[in-house]
Amino acid sequence: MQTRVSMESLSSIISPNTLSSSSHKRSPLAASPNTVSSLSFASLPSQQQRTTTPKRTSKATKSLSPTIPTTTTTSINTSSINTTTSQPPKKVLLPIGFGTEEMEAVIIVDVLRRAGADVTVASVEPHLEIEASGGTKLVADTFIVTCSEQVFDLVALPGGMPGSVRLRDSEVLRKIMNKQAEEKRLYGAICAAPAVTLLPWGLLRKKQTTCHPAFMDKLPTFWAVKSNLQVSGELTTSRGPGTTFEFALSLVEQLFGESVANKVGQLLLVYTADDSPRKEEFNKVDWSVNHTPHVLIPVANGSEVIEVVTIADILRRAKVNVVVASVEKSVQILASQGTKLVADKLIGDASESTYDLIILPGGIVGAERLHKSKILKKLLKEQDSAGRMYGAVCSSPTVLHRQGLLKGKRATTHPSVIDDLTKEAVKSAKVVIDGRLITSRGLATVTDFALAIVSKFFGHARARSVAEGLVFEYPRS
Image (cartoon, rainbow, N blue to C red; front, side, top):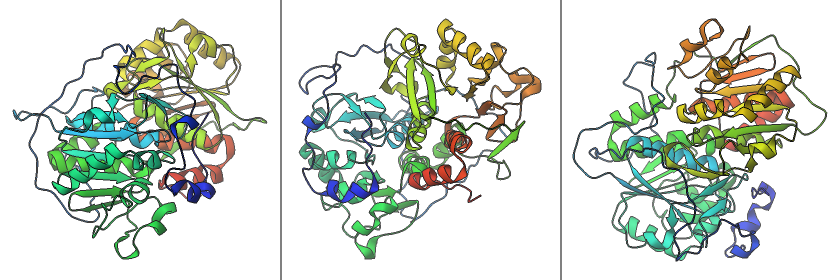
């Protein structure tokens, strides 16, 4: 069940104590706050790097301009940016609750961990597994109560409804945030969280602030700023899922400096050539169906979590029926950058249904595990034979290539592996559509990728409507 709520019902949710934890079905994976989680996620290597802290910026809106040429081929290595100083890693707290916006949560965590931050994801609920606003199931590292005596260099609040209400109603988190502000350490919030969470706590006083357009009227008029990013002293705020990369990179810059922020932005493909087209389409065919589109996203340990969550979230916003299926022996997945999520079902169970579209997320480790799945290989072969749609992002177009599913088709992939596609490679666009095939460079380009799918299924107007809800710039025609 998805927990995202409509804009029409926001006013009723903003009032205190409108939700109790009993309103959500308790997961069989749930643990109590006083027990160690029983989730046994396979361990993937992660490196915590160290660097120095720059002077804090207080500019209202800041565009991070890369110092590295945009033509440089970047690696898909998921480890953090290498630095050489011997200082301990910066500690960051990211709390989550039922209805947290999943794109915002995972992008913030991913970007900060790539920069070298030690990020703790803490649940404000009585259990570690939470269902996010779009239906994605995330698993926290710990409970918020275990963080109450710790000192964090940054506390960042994701938005989403009713997630922002759940954060607001956590007394432990309120005390942590008040102490963070009193001691003038960094704190930030995005989407609904500035207005719904920070404002009632009194943490926006005399601070220029932005938030999601649907909540701007809740902010004090004199201090409200209609910008994608607002830095005001120790406080950083932003507007929504579509501005989360900018928000997270601003936090990286404040913690580690502009050079590290630029390197991380380059790695994530946030910084691309200005003349790079949003998408190119060849051999145009109609994707529309006479039923609710049914989409499969297979996942594995090591799958690129930004891609999995962004694609699923955006397609669900467009009213697509999305199934996230694990090719592992368990539905529990340890995705890239140590983020833990729970798939909807196992690939064997998912294979009993027919899908209008199958999308492979990237991540070097995850893509290889997808390639080794015999069930998925059979599904992809049947998808192609039946003339149904399929696609891949980041490193996973190479999986399609190895399985003979790119023959005679144009495709793109992550810059570091694009030469592996030989004649099929298209280097000039973020998203490439060829008939019933769709591919993308991955990472920061997956929002364009997912919106292109929405446009193919439902038309441009639906895609633009979804983009507006994300606060993501999208062409009018």
